Length: 405
Image 1 (cartoon, rainbow, N blue to C red):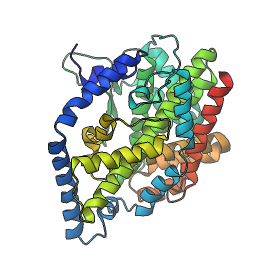
Image 2: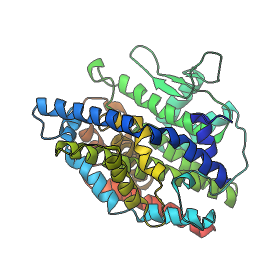
Image 3: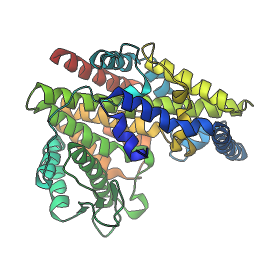
């Protein structure tokens, strides 16, 4: 069977470790074979970032990349520092994986996506999906739920796969019309999470364009994933709280914990690699393939700990991440995850005051700088508090899993 990117994702979730390992090694084989070209390509883009920053008298490439949205470099450094000092829950998650999957020789990168618990694979009708999304969003108040309902009833969404239609899911909007959402709905639980994610974007756009003049009528990338991941977090909470039995609850907790690994810790790991590789060139060091592999492998080992084995393929994983060419982009996945987790936890704890601040956030667009918009909503990304709150949440989810075993 020919290995494709789509099949690779499926194989990495296989309960058969041989399938996971062989697909992992096969996917990375051409990247190892072309390591010199890939290192040269990445080195060139780093040098272009350095040239651009120095031509404009920025102290570093990081200062240059964050300046457009007025984000202090301390936010980036604080995110990495706080996370590095609190890798305990991630390493605890790996020990759980090792125990449940019976990995006697340790945990490898190809073991991180295999499901720990299975549950009955249900098919959900479109009506069931929309109802679940609205139930998940109840904590955001009646107005938010009614706007969701309007989106479902007024045909904001191109729902089903069709000939010539692009894959995946997408949300877009502009003045004069409602937002549009593209889906390829197949009735899986994952599709429902995709739906709530994209409707988070759609409602963010809807509230913005109905409350801001056109000059402030969109929102920066730093904020773009907050509303979508908040919707996902609320749906996760709703499903976990209302799980039919222990097995279903464990499977849902597994999915949520995987998100903390892939969207929080892993993206911060990537962000640290990106920053350190730029820093090396700024100091005059060459980015050879061996130096890049050494750097990436060392960071990976630090985050995942002693139970984790870093293969040569894992060291070279940097070479297949296209986001490293986007100039300090990946850290925003983690900041959005942190901000949404903090906002959701405050809504759960405080109720209406936090909900009103959140709805004000959705209405803000670009009327303020991104950091100020989040501060008004109750999240100060220049402090460690929201990061620590996120890490604490992962710990509590692990507690729930261990109590159920």
